[in-house]
Amino acid sequence: MARIVMKFGGTSVADIGRIRNVARHVKREVDAGHEVAVVVSAMAGKTNELVGWMREASPMHDAREYDTVVSAGEQIVSGLLATALQHIGVDARSWQGWQIPIRTDNAHGAARIQEIDGAKLIERFGIGQVAVISGFQGLGPDNRIATLGRGGSDTSAVAIAAAVKADRCDIYTDVDGVYTTDPRMEPKARRLSKVSFEEMLEMASLGAKVLQVRSVELAMVHKVRTFVRSSFDDPDAPGMGDFDNPPGTLICDEDEIVEQQVVTGIAYAKDEAQISLRRVADRPGVSAGIFGPLAEANINVDMIVQNISEDGALTDMTFTVPSGDVDKALAVLEKAKPSIGFDVVQSEAGMTKVSVIGIGMRSHAGVAATAFRALADKAINIRAITTSEIKISILIDGPYTELAVRTLHSVYGLDKQ
Ligand code: ADP
Ligand code: ASP
Ligand code: MG
Image (cartoon, rainbow, N blue to C red; front, side):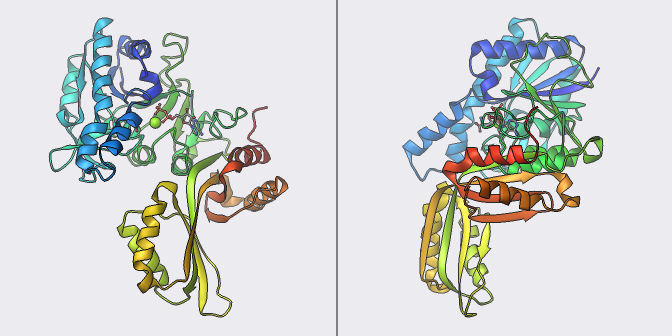
């Protein structure tokens, strides 16, 4: 007997038929004698709809009310799945974040989990009952519902797995594992049987939304054995209940991976915008003057390029922000103009950041040069570059996204044979 947390994403619970199918996956594990907690997302599209209603109600809405509204989709699915389980003879009960409770900080809309009391869940395991928990939500210090940021049910699942010391956390989604790149973008993408925590962390933070970044961090810190697998597989197909080797991708420590490739995957993030400040004084404190006010306004600045000034007096500063934050960023910069001192500010939205990720890069030279050459051969212009030990990120014009992803995927030999 083992303890398993099973998480089902939006497309996996998109209608009653699919919720019934999920119930069969859960029943399979219960029948095998395991203790099971389930974490659910809202039905596909529901959270977007709720976010849209909030924007319509007021563009400047209160984050606490946002959380009240957008957390509702998960509540519905938890009740429906508990009902579908009861219907097929599995003892189950729904749980909202506040009932457990899943304690978070006060950052409404993007809260971080601080503590989970696993006692009630463990009590239910003891009587053979399945706990069906609403993902994405917790309880803030103000005793109000707080949500964990988009895609946050993954994080709920891993955090609960850590709290109840589960043997495994299975993230069921609409693909059967983590691929070398988004399989929707490149049909030649290959499924990885294992991927290291570090690479998964980079892939997720660079745009592969198959797992929320925070969930990977938690899995790494708490050593949660996390599998990404498909909910669309027949729940009772052979091998589905294999405890040690379930079908899917295992996220694990680097040393568990025998055959390490130089490049493991390609990720992309659309909707980046580039902002350039022209003729900024080239003196100490100028970066602090620019990025301080942006940080205070909660704007996430990513790639930063500063040119060397020709005359030692004036330079250009270019950086990226999410497209949705451009107007806010421009307003902040205009306000800070007297203290920063620049000539003009220019902005361009609709960019994409494409990234090449691989632990093998630490010990291999020339990985970046290969990417630059391959993109040049396709006449794709590079606007900015950033690198770390295990990744290279390249900013390009949005319309070239698919071509760039496929080109890089193929140049590093990741295509399916
Ligand atoms: P869920 O609703 O189950 O949480 P998501 O839509 O959040 O599902 O994440 C699954 C999606 O992530 C897939 O449909 C796929 O298009 C996308 N994706 C992006 N990059 C990858 C990747 N490298 N491997 C697998 N899926 C990926
Ligand atoms: N329903 C939430 C969202 O769409 C959480 C999740 O799906 O993980 O962001
Ligand atoms: Mg998701």
